[in-house]
Length: 261
Image (tube, rainbow, N blue to C red; front, side, top):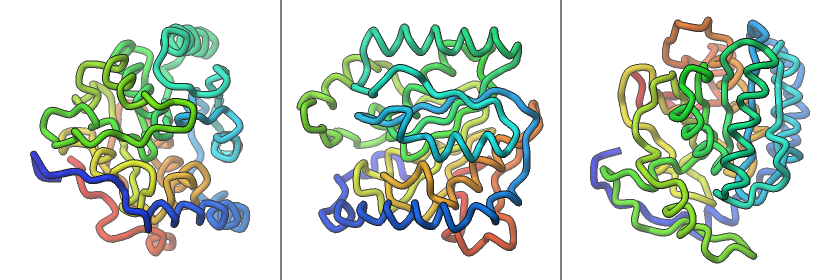
C-alpha cells in the first residue's frame, strides 16, 4: 500500500457479504481431510487471541485444528474481549508468562482482528518470549503515521467509544516493525475493518498474505488455516515467504503474498 494512501470504511456490500462466514464454516468441516495434509510442527506453544467482543469460543475451530498439527495450543482465558483495559494488559502478561514457564519455549501468537493488535504489543513487550506473530484481519496500521488512517474503526454495540479507547490505550505505533517474524493475513472483501490497515510494511521477515474470506470467517476459513499451519511449521530461526502448496493454489488470489522480504 502506498504511503499516505486514503483508507475508507468497508462498503455496505462488503458488510452484507460477511454472512458468508457460515459457508466458510461448512467449507472448514468439508476440508478437514485435506487440511490434515498440512505440515505438522515441533510441538511449541501457540497462544490464540480472539477479536473484539469475542471469546475463546470463537477460536475453538482454529485451536482444534492447530492441536491436530502437533502444537500445545492455548486460549487467552480472559472471557469476552471488551477492548484494551488494565485487566486485559495484566491478564495477557500473566498468561504469556505462565505459558512460557510451563513449556520452557518461545510462544507463537495468533491474533484475530483486535487480538492481532494485542499479539503485536505482546511481542514488543516480551520479544524473548515470542517466536512469531500471525495476525488475521488485524488493523494494526490504524495508528500508522505513514497511512491516512484517520477514518474511525466501526464501534460495536455497547461500546460506542471503542475507536477512541484503541487510540488512547494502545498508543505508540502498532504498525512499527517487530523483532520477530510476522505474517499478516488479510482479505480485500473485509466487511468489518479497512483491509489496507491489515497489511504490513515491506521488510525482512515480514509478509502480508491475501485470502478469499470474510472477516468473521477468518478463524475457520480453510485457506487461512493452510497459511497458519505453514507458518507455524517453520523451524525456529529460519524464515521464508509463504508459497501456496501447488494442489491448494486455487484457494488464494495471485499473487498470494503482496509484501514479503
